[in-house]
Length: 321
Image (cartoon, rainbow, N blue to C red):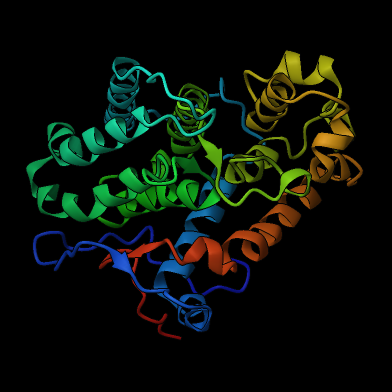
């Protein structure tokens, strides 16, 4: 699993859960000077390795394509369905502020208080002692309960949640396509509904200079799906006929369709960064460029990484070179 210059990550080499010393994740990057610790950390290396491994697993694949969907994947989707049902049960409250509906805080607390029990229902007892650590990343993956916002740092926490499931052996390499095309896609749809229902603000949005107000990773994995497509070229994705017709099968196009549903005005004005991507010659170049951009604009930014939590699985310890 090549990581473009990173040390081989331990994502696909599960630990011994019976002897492992789990611990509750905490903040470690408290000031900009701490970023060097993050850059050298196992967590940074493993997260990037995970994102690239998932990226490679869905190259030229459709959502409706043929790939294994294990019982584990089905249980993960069921876990997200449970969270979806809790969201539907917790109605937005009538409040004077336009953004940041405080009902989201009720959902966040409900998830935090019940997530370990829900995970214990899904997975074998031998994994249970790791769930207080692992579940932290799922809770952090739905947004911030104080600011009632959501952004690439929360998205990264959900990626860390999936990564830790690999690290303990709950997920296997064969699950990779379904993790991207089924589990993460369900998470993406859930988060869009949550953002709209509770009027969540974008966390640290760059406005028109970012890919999207809330997400980044779906554009990486979605562009991998389109590599080698005989009809859909990068210049095609801004065409409504293309993204309307193919959005069910391609994550990238579903993202474009969603942006056009929630934003008004010319695409090149409200999504300038994506507009510029449409001029790139091939999906291979789009994909590699987005991975580099993710490293620079998310993984290397203190305002994002200061909120990330480190435990035994996503470790601040340096990679052994």
